[in-house]
Image (cartoon, rainbow, N blue to C red; front, side):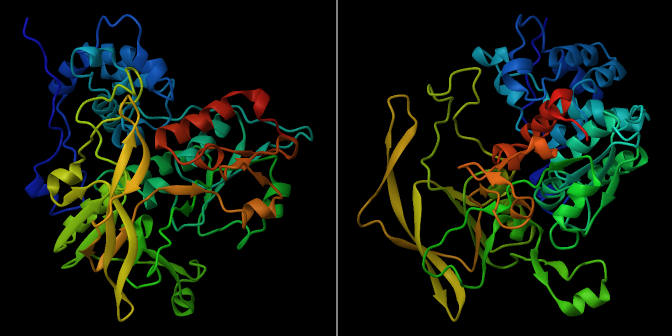
Length: 476
């Protein structure tokens, strides 16, 4: 019997996709997905389920159903553990695949694309329906109410989990539309916004209320929300981006990654008068057309910034990383089934641009108030015996100027600010700037604001784990 190989190229042609903002991945055919799902067999212990997937999806089971041609059964299986497979099926880095037993001698089973195929087939056939639930009542005999602040992946997951427990749920979102990071952090070519809107419509039809353009502490007091709902869940993410406070940072043309990806938030009284529901805020687009772009930061968000610059017709784009170049193969420091430390090349890197590692930024070069470049030096890293970077050392005589008239800082996030809703609710933060919940006052935290900046799937899993246990969520 001929062996089925893993499909290596899942993307639309580069020359086609860089001309639009549609999803970069192509839709695999039913025959392709069925064959790929059939590669999942006889592994004994499914490490993909336990050591890999934070949602504990029943991966071998839905793969078996799809391989047998029963996509409906596959949907019924994945729906037992995951509320939003259309999101994770597009943006999850597939921790499950890293834990696949085939990694020992072969390419791992293709899981994420199978998940995406299942949910899209389910939507096309009208299978996606949210279960009806019995309303929950509080001690006074009234409907139990829950407020969720933030509508990113953790907030949406928390809202649906609370609804399934019988709560009447209201979600507060400071932006114009729900979605949080899904809408305002992930570009359209990885997650088309119609996919978010489709799910929001389902949640609204099931009774979840969304209140947008509403920032708690500014438009409604935090105390009001706490007093008017039986339970309060904070799902505000980690809004503090890691900045690069070196000389010249005040120059024009330097932006944080999310400012560049989805526009810099501005306040304008004229705009506010013409858009009365905007609370004076709007997003000012930032375009890289014809510019020399420098992306500082080598993670997924930085990769997306590379993709945006190329789609806008930049003159050039360079992505630099402070850390050393990872090894081509899995590092011995991350043995299977751990998430491997190794070099990854994203869709954006196939589209163009350059990458450099071991680069430390020292100062911005500024002319007439505008950025014109960055002075950098080379860094050598002391490595552990297993090949993990331990300590950086600058190399003398390696200073150079990298020319750039648009610089994007994509260096991650540092946590939750103390000002705002944290202070308003008299909450405390951990040393890692994550929120400490206050169960005595029925105030909880889920996702990145509770556990630190991480993946969409981990934010969802955090909400699932905390709300799934009735002992941890109690009404008044």
